[in-house]
Length: 73
Picture 1 (tube, rainbow, N blue to C red):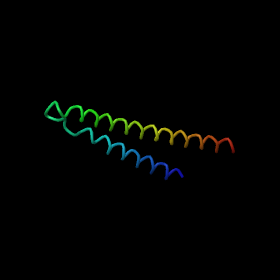
Picture 2 (cartoon, rainbow, N blue to C red):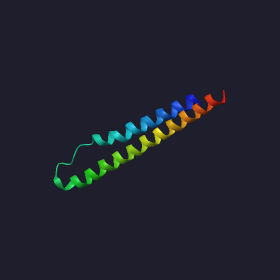
Picture 3 (tube, one colour):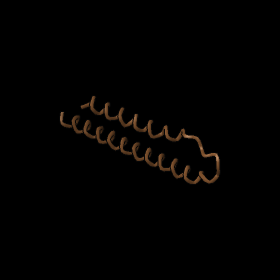
Picture 4 (tube, rainbow, N blue to C red):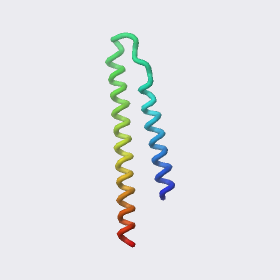
């Protein structure tokens, strides 16, 4: 189980890094493209935030399951 959790966390980490790499795209050279660019960056950041929150929730769930195992013994 622990190996699966670590593998899953590594997969999520790789996805987060991949999503954040989109921010490295250069800004548009004209002002007309800036609103679209800003919306795009905000979307990427919102997606990343959601992924991090899901990772935190799975980690909390994993910790709770370990706490319940300790209580049984």
